Image (tube, rainbow, N blue to C red; front, side, top):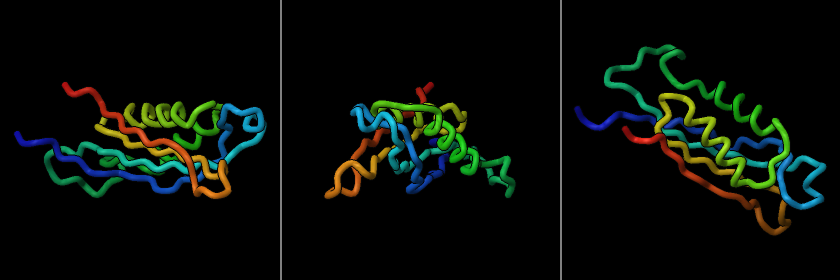
Length: 124
């Protein structure tokens, strides 16, 4: 058989309030974070019937990310990105997750600061 067919499922510019940061002034108030996801999702070999049950539901994905971000304080954007990547890779069809987390209100002269990571499921 040839290489596995995949599709890219993405979420762009999801902005959420988040308790994040190591500094004292970041401990009490929420900051805006922007999250971008690119997921490589296995397709299978044949045509995909036109039913939601046959694809990854990005509505559920966004709800899961919202719940994770709202679950409590995290010190580092790196930690949040790792948690989001793990959340994505739990889905059996996700092969690779690229996660970007940006804090939007840190510097008045910069649009954002943050991190981007890429994580994959182990190859068999």
